[in-house]
Image (tube, rainbow, N blue to C red; front, side, top):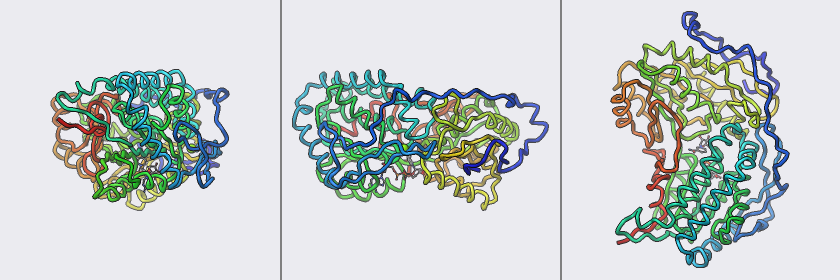
Length: 508
Ligand code: NAI
Ligand code: MG
C-alpha cells in the first residue's frame, strides 16, 4: 500500500463495500483532478552544514560528529546537522546560566517583552520561508505549515510577549521569579510550533533555555536562531543543541537545569520522569494520545465528516491530539462511514509543497514502518482495513488514509497510539456507552463530540477524561487556551495563563 512503484492503478486494501443505498448520498465527483501547484523553493537558503547554536554563535560540536536531516517526501538529504554530546550540552547549559545572571536577568520586564514582540513580528515577516522549510524537512503539507503552524508560532510569541511585564497581574499578591535554566525537548510533528510553545512562555517569564529539536526536523529551529539574534535576544538566552535521544537525556540529567519541558512519546516521558525522580527539577510532560471523536445521530453529519478528516488525516495523523478513534451512533454509522469513504476518495496524498495536497509525507521511514506494522496488526486482529485507491509518489514515505472497520475495545489498533493517518471506527448505542468506551484508554489528551444538542455536548465534555474536548469542531488551537493531558498523556499544562506558572517560582 505504500511501496514506491505503485500508481493510481494500484488496488486498494479492500474493495469498496459501501451499500448501494448509501451511495445515493455521495456528493463528490472524483473524475477530475487539480493541476499541480507546487510552492517554489528558489528563495529558500539552507546551509549544507549546521553547527550548534550556543551563546549566540554557531559552533562546532566537540566530537565533530554530524547527522543528516532528509526531506521525507523524496528521501533526499537536505543538510548535515551537528550531533551534540555531553560536552556540548554542558557548554549550552553554562551559557544559559550565565545569561540568566547577565543581561537577561538584569533586563526590565518591559524590555524583555519588547524583544519577544520583535521576534513575533520577524516570524511573520519570514513566514513563507519558515513554512516551506517546515514542509521540506518534516513532510507536512504546505497548507498546514503556511496556514496553521507558522501563524500559531507568531501568535504564541505575541501572546506571551504581552505577559512579560504583567506577571504581577497574572499572579496578584505574589512575587514571581523565573526558575532559571529550562531544558526543552520537542518532537517532529510540529517542529517550530512546539519550539514556540516552549520558548515563548519560558522567555516571557525571564528564564533562559537550552532547546533540543527532534532529530528528523531540526531546520526551522536553526532558522529561528537567526531570528532570535536579529531580534536582539542576548547571547546564551536561547541555545539550540541538535541531536538524538542521548542529547535529550544529557540535557535532562544536567545538574544546572532547573526545569524540563518535554513533548513526545509516553515511553520517553516515563524515562524522563524516572530520571527526574528525587531531584528538585520541575517538569511538564506532553505525551501521547488516542483521542475519541464521538458522533451522535443528531449531529450535522457532513460537518462531522469534515471534522473527522481534519482530526486524523490532515498532517498525516502526526498529531498527539489526533481524533484516532471514531465512535459513531449505530443508527447513523452506515451513512457516516459511506460519506467518510467518499470524502477519503477525494483526499490528495503527495508533494507536501503542492498547495492542493491534503496528506503529505510520513515523517521518517521508521514512522512509516511503525504505521505499516499496525496495518498488519489490524488485519491479524480481524479488523477490516479500508484505503481509497489514490496514487502516491514513487519515492519518499507515504501512507494512504486508512479506516479500521469493525473494531473492538480490546484491539491493539484501538488501544495504542499509531501516529499515522489511520482511524479506528467503533459504534455505540447510548450516551453512557460512548463515554465508557471513549474513556477506556490509558491516554487522556483530547476528544471531540458532534451533536446538535448543546446540553449533550457539555455533558459529554465534562465526562471525558481528557485535557481538551472540542464540540462540533476539531484541532482548534489558540495561545490563550491551556493544553495538556490526563493519565498517561502528560503532566502539567502549556498555553494561556496556565502556561506561565510552570516557569515561575511564586512566593508571597
Ligand atoms: P520520542 O519521544 O522518542 O522523541 C521526542 C523527542 O525526545 C525527540 O527530540 C527525541 O530526540 C527526544 N528523546 C528521545 N529519547 C530521549 C531520552 N531518553 N531522553 C530525552 N529525550 C529523548 O518520539 P519518536 O521516537 O520520535 O516517536 C515515537 C512515537 O512517539 C511516535 O510513533 C508517536 O506515537 C509518539 N510521538 C508522540 C508525540 C506527541 O506529541 N505526543 C510526538 C512525537 C512522537
Ligand atoms: Mg527532516
